[in-house]
Length: 178
Image 1 (cartoon, helix red, strand yellow):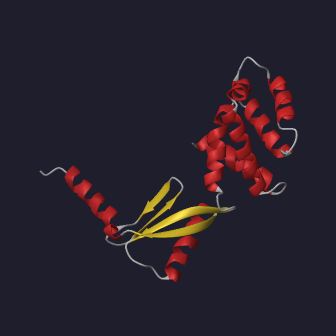
Image 2 (image 1 turned 180 degrees about the vertical axis):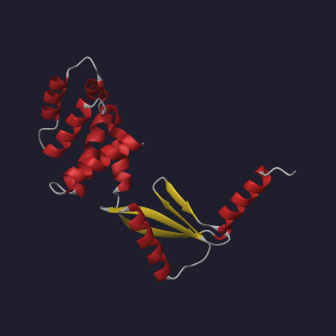
Image 3 (image 1 turned 120 degrees about the vertical axis):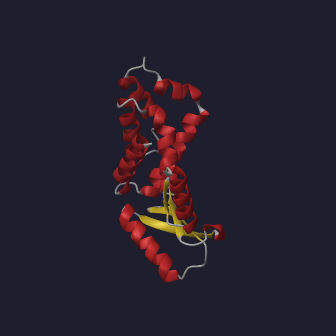
C-alpha cells in the first residue's frame, strides 16, 4: 500500500500546479477505464518482452489527444520502474483520497451530538497530525458509550469508552493470576 500511496501522491503533487487536481483525477480515471476495457493494450504494457521505447511510442500514440503530458509522463515512469500493473490501485487510491479536491474524507463517530466547536477542534487537530485538509462527516454511534473515533482512509483513532473497556478486558484476561 505504501508504494501505491507514494506514486499517487507524487503524481498529484506533480500535476497540481500545471493541470490541477481535478483534471489529473479525470485523466487517471480515463486511463484506468482504457486499460480495463482493453485487455490487449494492458497486456502489451505489462509484457516484459516488449522494450520500454516501443511501449512509450505506443503510449504516446494512444493518448495523443485529450491527455496531458503529465499523465503520459507518469505512465512512462510506471513503465520504466516496472510498476504499470499497479496503475489501477494508484488511480483508485487517488480517487478516494482526493474525492473532495484537496480535502480528505474523514468520518467522526460519536456517541452523542457534539457542539460545532468541539467537532472543529477534532478536525483541526487531525489536520495538523495528517498535514492535510479534511472533509469531516459525523455519524452517531450510541453503542460507543462515550468518546469518539476518527476514521481517515485506513487510519483509525479510537478514543471511545467501548474500545477502552475492550482493551481493559483483553489485558485482564491475558494477565496470569498467581
